[in-house]
Image (cartoon, rainbow, N blue to C red; front, side, top):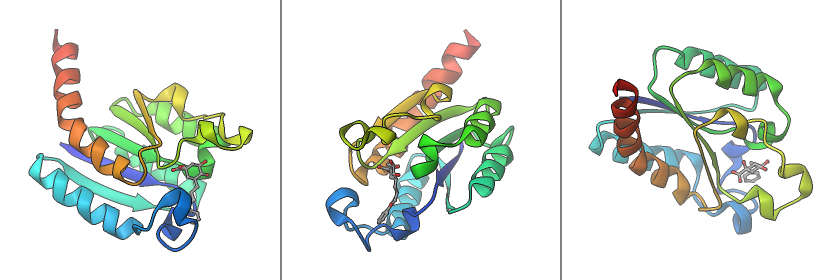
Length: 151
Ligand code: CA2
């Protein structure tokens, strides 16, 4: 099974600033761990990051009919992007919204998500370990989903 892990703006700075919120791991090290874990679980993980909204939209469109699941940390675009919301609506595979921090414990402008209404699940506040936690649970969830749609 194929999975896109899509990351939005500024997440390329992970491990360099604000470690009290986002920890000390770099996005590259998280990607490496997810890919190793995914390989053990039979998942082919493509891990990507962009600071551009249009690029995130293009990756979601590329996933349509080619990928089984999207894990998306849209970062600040979570709270602003109708374009990402619309693209996610068009992707009919399994979708997980992921955040390192819990946005609901932060400023009120982070309490609104344009992503949440168009995904199957939301994971937030587990730190950077949340990425691996989601990869670990995905095979189980995807198997369950394919079973239920066949029934
Ligand atoms: O908690 C998350 O994962 C967020 O999606 C991170 C976004 C933030 O806008 C969302 O409200 C919650 C910010 C990502 C910026 O990442 C940085 C990492 C290190 C240093 C500076 C920014």
